[in-house]
Amino acid sequence: MRALHRNDPVSAPIALVLDSPHSGTEYPDDFDHLPPRAVVRQAEDTHVAELYAAAPRFGATLVEALFPRAYIDPNRALADMDAALLAEPWPGPLSASHKSELGIGLIWRLAHGGVPMYARALTVAEVERRIAQCYEPYHAAVAAALDERHRQFGAVWHINCHSMPAVGDVMSDDPGRPRADFVLGDRDGSTCEAEMTAFVAATLSDLGYDVAINDPYKGVELVRRHGRPAERRHSLQIEINRRLYMDERTLAKTAGFATLRANVERLLTALASYVRARV
Ligand SMILES: [Zn+2]
Image (cartoon, rainbow, N blue to C red; front, side, top):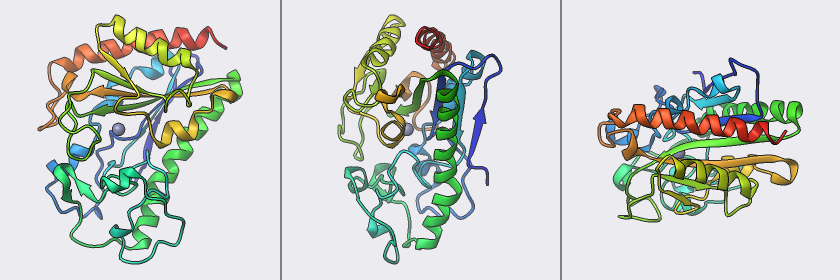
């Protein structure tokens, strides 16, 4: 199986890299989930890579995961695993976070609505295979793209691209609460320069969107791992409200998709100017 697709610049490269870890829809044959596929697919950030598909025209690289997030979640730490999923002891360190408690750690224990993802316990060997075939290649691809640009420009800006349900569900920290149009996450100012968060927030506000910062999503493993502002490596998570572009039940694009994609291109235009002015 292919773990990812790397979309490289079709114009002169700039110091900008994007990644879409949760929009993959290629379900492996050995993913024997218990609920119907339509329920499991609620975990996807469906269509997100397509919203940012213009990135290579601006000189950015866009890395997109092809495997589904419910199979293994690249936006979790490797140790963030729920031992209750496994048929045998895990050989490495385990440090289950609050996400694992919610059923949505490295390997999801629960599907949408809080129903069990599997009818059986998983073996260590199959989890290790998911790590080797999906998780590690994805992280290596993101790291390589960032390192290349950082080497070329002495700095790199990274957008970690996601979408979120319109209203918090039972597996979130804000059940029942409507979300803003966009939520920016910089882990309370630790993964990028403050100017980057402020610039993206202002650009989106000017486009007419309401924007929240670090509420309810602060960013997780990808921005934590790759965002090191002291080394001029800046990572920002962007969550887009799914009601802006899709029917959350059927996953079909709505009429809003084209408008949103055009506005994402305006954001990319603005980001390209931002990074050019800083290298
Ligand atoms: Zn996501």
